[in-house]
Every structure is written in C-alpha cells, then in structure tokens.
Image (cartoon, rainbow, N blue to C red):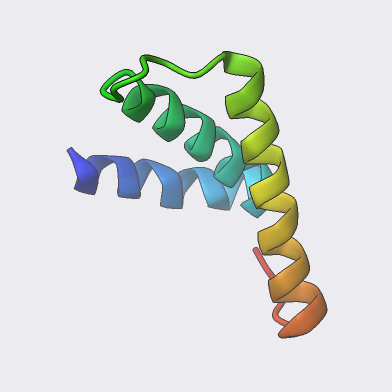
Length: 71
C-alpha cells in the first residue's frame, strides 16, 4: 500500500507541483492515520492547518535556507 501511495504522490508532483501535491498527501495521510490514534480522529481543520504549516516550513527550508528549487 505504501508503494502505491508513493507512486501516486510522484505522479501528482509532476502534475500539481510540490506544494499542492504535498499538501494533499499530508492531509490524506494525517486523516487516515489519525483514526488509529488513542484519542480518536483529530478535527479536519487541525489536520488542514498542520499540513499548511508543514508545507510552508518545508518550502522555506529548502528554497530559503538550502537554495534548492522544488518541482
């Protein structure tokens, strides 16, 4: 299952660019993994907000600090 998700993400990066594909993958991953947590599923707004912050942080670190061009 992990391999299929990785292939879908790689194909999505080519079509949707890094930010959108990573955001969608993070939201989907957090949403599906959260249902197995002890406290239950996190609210959707928290998953979306966390994904936005993480994508912005990753973009800043790679493009601002390391000067790497993301796809």
